[in-house]
Amino acid sequence: MSRRLHAVPSLRAVRPPRGARAFTLIELLVVIAIIAVLASLLLPALAKAKAKAAQTKCLNHQRQLGLCWLMYADDHEDALPPNETDLGGGRAANNATARTWVRGNAFTDTNTVNLEQGVLFPYHRSTAIYKCPADRSTVRDQGRRPRVRSVAMSMYMNSVLDPADVMHRQMWQKLGGIVRPGPAQAFVFIDEHEHSIENARFAAPQAADWTWIDFPAVRHGDAFTLSFADGHAEAWRLRSAQSRRIGRLPPWIQFQTVPRGDPDLARIHGAVKERELLR
Image 1: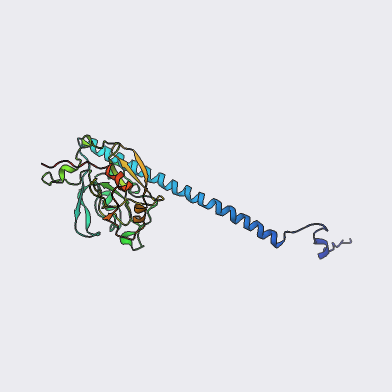
Image 2: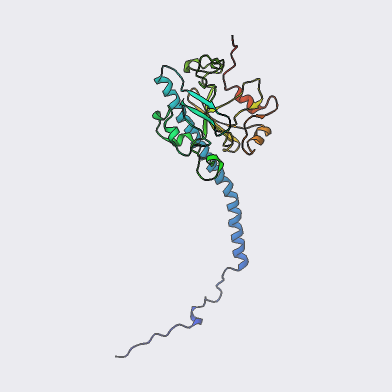
């Protein structure tokens, strides 16, 4: 039986038919350039969407902490969670005491033990709500271990527990006593700047003082989140160039003076307890 041998096609046979046209190098470069332009237009929008998602998550954390705070007051005959701080002198020594809403020091704590031992933890057993998702700071600023907390509580929310202390009357001790401003205007938790946070409280001056003691975070495009005594949460954007400048300073950024009438500090003034006349 004869076998038919199939001829191997020559190179000429596999060449593209006459008239077919391939991309030139110039055309490929034009396509690449168009793709690059489209990417440059899309990337800022994607970054903005990512930042907005982080802010939304941060606001949700504030609401969750606010609910824990309200439930504690409901369980303790309207008494607010303690917010006591031991000012030991220096950032690493200014610690929240054992009788406060969260223990320890956000600058030095290497784990979540002090969060779990705070009086609010039983109401929401997640340590994630104590930290802004956009916070990239590390323990002692050493770049090794992420910090576990980025929020602090207003000093006017029961931070002086001793009735004999002259500052005691300037703090709120009961949920029902929060007036001037009312619960919808009095802030409880605030996302604090990574170059300012240490103990559990956020020290905020009253209207006669135009010096930031602690400073709010600027992780959401010069904006920070905070929750209020009625349970809602908001995001506030820094308005003045002076405040935005402070937000970019290296650590430590406490005790920063701003011009009288600064809109950002004035807004904080309106969200803390008005000073009572001491007798």
